[in-house]
Image (cartoon, rainbow, N blue to C red):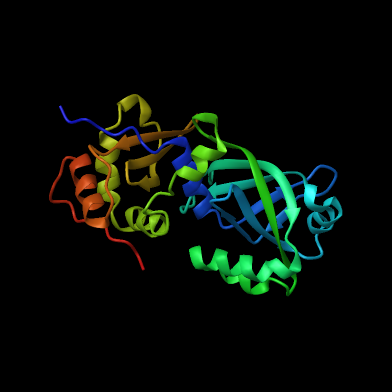
Length: 254
């Protein structure tokens, strides 16, 4: 019998959500939530954030000084497809928020850009200000429940290698490979097939499906026999999963 994988670790799922999330919300007690235009986890145990210079969060961070103030960053992982319930997971990063001095902002922005360029970095000093969130804890919640990981485990994990192309692949599956999705759906127990089966997520360990049933949604995971690291391997694993080695391969949409 082939041995299947068990899916990404909680820390890996958090890192992938952090990499994918296009926006985040910074919450500080006594103030309205602040939308951030950039967030990046750093190896030093902080998250670098970019917020509007005229926001309450910036003002409170400057007032708090070097000691900082408690804050929570909420990241939302939205499904690439128009699902009935679009949120796949939520991640909460709790820690101490500190302002980045002006004389260090440009150097930090360059460091962030070196890891992963982001157009919002052009706004540093022009209506947007950098902040640091010194991380104390991390929690993720999805359809299976909530789970916490240590900051050390979070920083040691890598995001899924396909996080940047997942959107194109899922859209390609939905629009051009409905036959493959149907083959996957047929492998589910009949008791689960209570409504349309939609692609929900794909990673190096397998594929997730969303069943939009009459009494509510349900997410299921179908694992590959072993983790994959490139597009050809992922395509082969999908064909093996549906039991049809001649199904057209999956290609990323550019």
